[in-house]
Picture 1 (cartoon, rainbow, N blue to C red):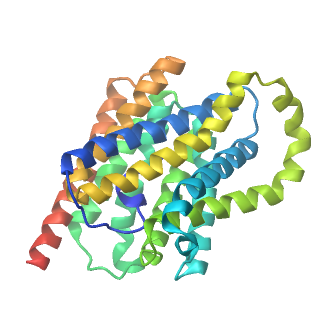
Picture 2 (cartoon, one colour):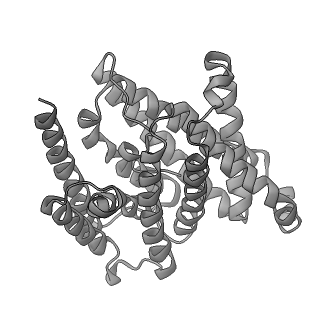
Length: 311
């Protein structure tokens, strides 16, 4: 599942070196996360149930992250200062995964991905009430403009499936909730949050697995070796995407990386075209441009405010 990357990091990390490297790593991250989305959408097209695909996505992701992180950081990386908040965030993330892949089963990848970028704007619009931040007209204007862009994307003449649009908008709201929950766990290391997020989904779906497998086994038995690789790769792409994301924010500031976050839509459009021959039309690209522009402009304004406040 791809999320608008600038808001999915558990904490703001201090950049160390090579900001250009941070930009390049972030772009690689966007392609990896789009690879996760494409792999999940593709394998569900062969009849693999949503929850079974998500089980592979979470369990493989968790195993890989633990294998890479534990030898370097030790068991202390598993400890959270706010375990209840981590469980809540992990649960919301799991539900948003279900919702997003449900949207992908009905919508082209580029359109489904672009709707996700409404989430950061939703967070800014409700920040005065939920996060107790000062109300700003610029945030509400940005959210309104971003929603206008989404309306252009999901316009009736676009021919998008209504259920896909509904799941897409639900996903944006869940992502916004996930971002707010992320503020609560910002005291933890980013890798700790990454592990807990994977663990919550893995545990919940493993508990449900005995109820899911009987209906899924006939489909799983018919999968070819290549299809099994694609199914397992959902966890690989998710692990790689999030680890690269963390590396990017360790090398460059969030303000520098913010405009490049939206290149994920380009990756989604490219994969959608290469795999399914689905490419957004002109009006959809206009809507995508409106959403991206509103996010970039308000991100720049917020960064300037923070810079002045810290001066």
